[in-house]
Image (cartoon, rainbow, N blue to C red; front, side):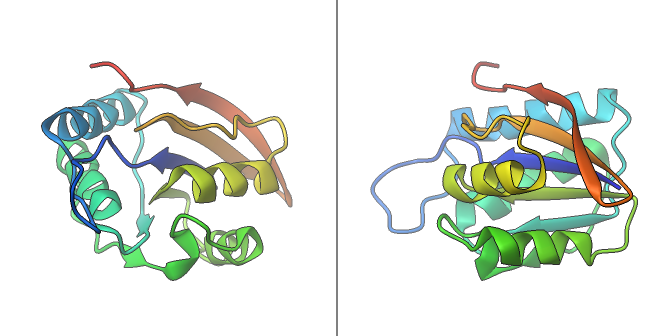
Length: 147
């Protein structure tokens, strides 16, 4: 299984559940194009229920040419439980999955799965991990902080 862990794009301020800023939308689209160039073909998308994560996932899917219904989970909110996130991801049973979350949750999930993976995520940063048997390994990491 290949897992693409992504922090949401930059977001607008002044709202309790802000959406992406224009720059954040550009980051998400750039992330989608980057993933497409890497040959990514996710079969599942997981997000938190927060608007900025949902909008990031939608923009990435648009660039990838996919239209999967995201599975929204409280586990992927900013302070979600890493063990619950890991269980959700490992139960998917797909070859590739996209997880869009928040700095704290995505960083903790990365650390839980693969200690060598970066755990400080800038906006729209992508970390690709691969599972072989029960172990996860880092494939690559890419920042999308400037587009």
